[in-house]
Every structure is written in C-alpha cells, then in structure tokens.
Image (cartoon, rainbow, N blue to C red):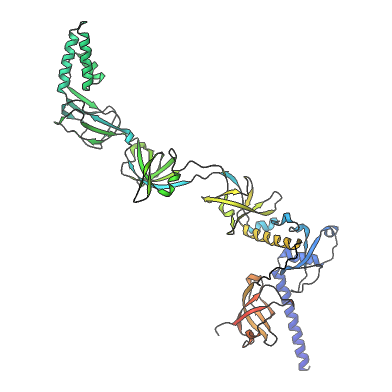
Amino acid sequence: MKAPAIAALVIAASAAFGYAGYRYAMHRMMPPDTAATAAASAAPSTSGASVDRKVLYWYDPMVPQQKFDKPGKSPFMDMQLVAKYADEGGGSAGDESKVTISPRVVQNLGIRTAEAKLGSFEPKLEAVGSVGWNERGVAVVQSRSNGFVEKLHARAPLDPVAKGAPLVEIFFPEWAGAQEEFLLLLRQASPETRPLAEAARQRLVLLGMSAEDIAQVERSGKVVARFTLRSPISGVIAELAVREGMTVMAGATLFRIVDLSSVWVTAEVPEAQAAMLVPGSRVEARVPAFPEQVFVGRVGAILPDVNAVTRTVRARVELANPGARLKPGMFATLSLSSGRGKPIVLVPSEALIRTGERSLVIVVEADGRYRQQEVEAGIEMGGSSEIRKGLKPGDKVVLSGQFLLDSEANLRAGLSRMDSPSPAVPAAPAAPALHKGTGVVTGVSAPDGYLELKHDPIASMKWPVMQMGFSVPDKKLLEGLKKGDGVEFEMRGLPNKDGDFVIDRVTRKAGP
C-alpha cells in the first residue's frame, strides 16, 4: 500500500475518533434533563399531548442567548437544538420571577424552608455597675436625751441584726426625774391633779420615751432609769458610733442600719444609648461570685447628670437580693430591656439575599413553585431579621439553595424579557465575558490566526477536557508558539459569526 493511502486512512481514523470524543464530551456536559429534552425536540412528535404544547423557540443549551425559529442542528456545537415551551415558565410577564423545580432536584439541593412569623425585638442594652446600699432601706437609731451608755449588745460594724433585737442599754437621768414627778401625780389622784398628771405624761413623750415604756412605768409604779434601744428593722449595722461608758447627747446618731433584702446597682450607660433607658424596665444582673444565678430587678431612676470624663449616664437599678448574696462593692454585669418591643414579621437571617441595592427572599407558593420577592429588611438580632415590607406571617421562604433558585429566576426573567416586544432602540454592545483556561498546543497557524488546543476543564464554561480549534484575531500572539507548548489563554464566552470561539490572549506557560 502506498504511503499517501496510509496517511489518508490515518487522518480519517483520527477524525472519526476525535468526533466521537467530542460528541461524548458534549453529552457529558449536558444535564440529563437537557439531553432528554434535546432528543425529544429532535424526534418527531408521536403523541397528541406533545402536539398541544406551544413551542416559543429553539436554542442551543451552550449558547442560550441565541434563538432559532425551527429545530435542527446547532451552528455552534455538534448537537440538536432544544425546544423552549410556553408552559415551562418565562412565557408571560407574571411568571418572570417564578421557577418550578422537580422534587428530585429539591431533594438533591437540600432545600430547607421556614415560615415568616410574628415576633418582637426588645433592644437589649449591656452595662456594668457596682452594688451599693438601698438608701430607702436605711434606719437611724439616735439618742433622744442626754445619757450614759452602760451596755452595748451590737459591738461591730456590718454585724447582722434582726428586727427588735437589743442594740444598747442607756441610763437617762432626765427620764428618771420626769418619771418620779409623773408617778407622784398619779398617786395623788384627784380632779385637781389629773391635768398635771397628763402634762407630766406629755413631758415623758417629749423626752423620747415610747408609749410602751410609759405604760410599763404606769403599771409597775416604779422608776425605770435604764432603757434598751432595739433595732427597728432587720439588716446589717452600716455605722456604729457608740461604745460602753460613753456619754451621749440628745440627737446623737448611735446606729445606722441597712436592710439588705434589696440593693441598688448604679449602672454606667453610654450617653449615645441613654434613650434606651426606660424607668421600670426589666433588668437581669450577674456577678462573678455567683455566675450561675440571675438577679432580677427594675430600673428605678435615671439620674439627672452625665459623667464628663466617661460620657456616661447613670441609672439606678433596684435588685432583689435573696439570701443577702449581693454585697455592697460587688461588680455586676447588667442586661437591660427597653420594654418597647412591638409585633413584627421575622424570618431567619439566612433566608435573605442581599445584593447591595436591595434584599430578596425566595418564596414557596402553594403550587410548589418558587418566586423572587423583594423585601425591606430591618434590624437583625439573634439570627432573625425584621421584614418591614414584602412578607406576611405564614409565608414560606427558602433557607438553603436560594442563590441557585435566584439565579434560575433571573435567567428565566431575562429570557422572558427577550421574548416580549420592545421599542427598536439600539443597544450598546456589551463587552464579551472572558474565561480563563490552560492547555497544550496541538496545532497552530499564525498566518491564518488559528490555534488548536487540548485544553483542561474550564469551570466557568462548564467544559470538560476537549481538543478543539480557536480563532485568534491578534496573529502576533501566535508567533513563537509550536506544537506541544503549554499555554494559558483567555477566551470569549460566545462564538463569533463563523461559529468559532475566539481567544483574546494566549501566553506560553513558564517552566520546562
């Protein structure tokens, strides 16, 4: 056999294998549903149901922007054109933002949904403060007359005392003389001495004797010169100003007793957040000494001054103190609620698609279709977002996979707008999108501007490994390239009028 014949057979075999590989690659690139649709569109209709479906146009799945009036083979790829039916969505303006997804695809995508619900956000404010005495629970024990301290029962500051417990015994000489006069007038009971006896009783009251003490003297008929002062409340001795053997003057403060059933915490709140403080709002406090316990209270008052150094407003918080665990001087962390929460529509924050200019959600309709819905989002807290406009309670939104659905809805809306008539206004040509790739030169012709490559997968084009030819308008890029060179290139996403994909940049890869 002659050499030319052998060469011709080799070339024919190579072309056959290359075509078979290209067809296989195209088949792998097409999704199963698209491949089935392409086959169905190419085959003649054999059922009445198929005849009833209205075909809008035919298109190449690899170049969906280009539409054709009749079926046939794509001029761009070696594959059949696919029919676009009116009932597939995108056929009317009302369906532009709606897509239909099969249950199998929904399961594969792992789409999760949630309902929009009514709820409320109570803005919370975190602050710190220190524990102090509740000044409304302070009692002072004073001497009502001049006297001498004979016995002291409470001997140390901060000692706990119960209500009615003895504090100190004092001898009051002035009380003794007034009692003698009072008893003498009682013994000389007559109509003439009765007014004098009442005047003597009133004198004892003015000297500071209680009604119980006066009644005891009247019943016993004896002078009581030593009196025991008792605690008026339960608490601790915050101030002790008396010792045994001291002489005390009338009006002198002997004890200052504080009730610890409740305490005050002075909270420091930044001036910019002072508007969130509301008297009477709920407060939860924690202290390092008891991290597991939450102390509940209310904002008692907002003090009318601002710290000029720290620029903070002080709020007085009243806390219940069970077991007297909170001690003055402790450091507390406070969580304050404004109490101004109002019912709002809430969705999980992961349902929102934020484009920078607007916020979208994907809504699941009753018939199982999905549509875009523009919303006005408000504040976000605890993984939930406020929806001010666009949704109502009970609407079901997509939590996962919504970006894929949004992309599909945008594509179908774009195709629908291309179908609808529009004024004949010349549009500015869009710059072609460039896709990067790498490969090995299998053929090159600089004068013809032709480059053949065996390229690696191109993810942005969804292309597998293929060997194909490209048009290179800038022929200088091909100078110095030879078969077997590894190259990096950038190509346009759409073919030219001759059906060839165009490379705008190609460089030899560095290295051996």
